[in-house]
Length: 231
Image (spheres, rainbow, N blue to C red):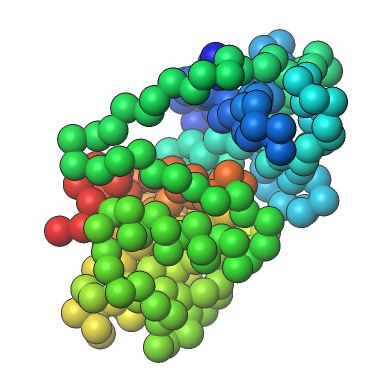
């Protein structure tokens, strides 16, 4: 079974429960990383790709696999990196439990993020899962990152190692206004405090992408979009 641990954000003191995702080895056996319950999370202020991956030996076949370091996006905008135990990860049962589907959608299937292009792919897949169609590169280049567009929507994918800034959020909102469209922002490194506050004021949904390719909403408009999907 995937391991779950309590996590307290050192920035806002919110309590979370993090569940380590299982990763498939080439031998076909899923295994989850073993988390260190005694160590607190670290705030991820700067991202270095070489430090974003951990090497784990499969207990079933002995292969060494590289998996994304476990991270958690707090609704306050802080990205937390969880500590790992030195003990080997447990092997999940051979029979995988069938995921529970939501009333309207099947569970989202993420893709691992190793490059900026992977981040764009993960975002496009998530937007399609939300119900948007005809997703393409945006005609207008954003101030940072990569722009995506769908009928009635403008999205920005920011794979930078710094948190998204106030200007980035405002420019995305202005672009959406000129095109009479909604907008949504995806960031790998979270958001500056003033950027998140302005997004709340403007109603811009914010998501943080972890290295598994799973977007997590970090403000109320983001949570509403994740729950309701495309209108």
